[in-house]
Each structure stands twice: as C-alpha cells, then as structure tokens.
Amino acid sequence: MAHDLANYLNEMVLDNSYPCGNGVALFMENEPQDCEIKALLTRYLRRYYETVLSKEKECESWDLYIEKALPQFELQVRKCRLLSSFYWAVWSFKILSKDQVCNDSVFNYDYANTHIKLFSKMRKEWSL
Image (cartoon, rainbow, N blue to C red):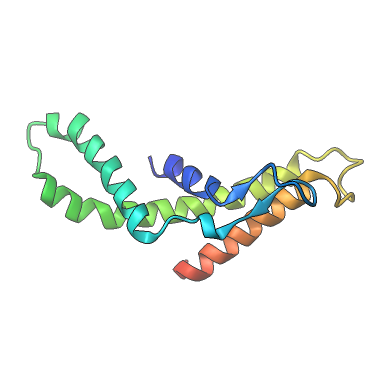
C-alpha cells in the first residue's frame, strides 16, 4: 500500500517531458503540503478499514485504528518515497547500453539526477 502512494507522490514533482536539457526536471513546488498528504493517507486508510478490517470479528473502532495506524503509515510512505527515488535512479543507469554509459546527454542522466536530488531533499527534510 505505502509503495504505491509513495510513487504517486513522487511523480507529482517530476516532469518527464520537460522541454529543456534531456527532458526531465524536478519541480518541488508541486509537492503536496503535509496536510494534503495526511488527508490522502487518511482517506486511503479509511477505505482499507471499510473494505477489509471492518469485516473482521474483532475490529477496533475507526478512531482507535486511525490514531494508531496513521503515524506508522506516514512513516512507511516516507521510507517508500526514498526507496522509490533510489530505485529509479539506479534503474536509469542500469538500462543504459554500453555506448551510452559515458554519454551524459541521454535522458537517463537527467532522470537519475532528478531522483537523486529528490532522494537527498527528502532524506534531509525527514532526517531519515
């Protein structure tokens, strides 16, 4: 669950059709505010609670569940955002052909650099 949302949130700040350079750029002004992320995660957990957890015999109340689950889920999403950025940066280099490895004008270099910048910014901001 957390990884899907992490990818979704990361994609909000990446433009893979940027008209300059090699075609990718980072736009942190598109980053949702903390309250917007919290609202998204709460809604996601609400749906999970309603469709899965509420059907169990010994189901705790929504209020108890969200009080316990939301902080853990927020941390999971943050860690998955870091993992996702790291993964895509490594992947962009991994798929280069031998003749592209030393060619920094290919899309993959800008793609990797944007993910590395995003990773570094998030890691510093969240102290993870």
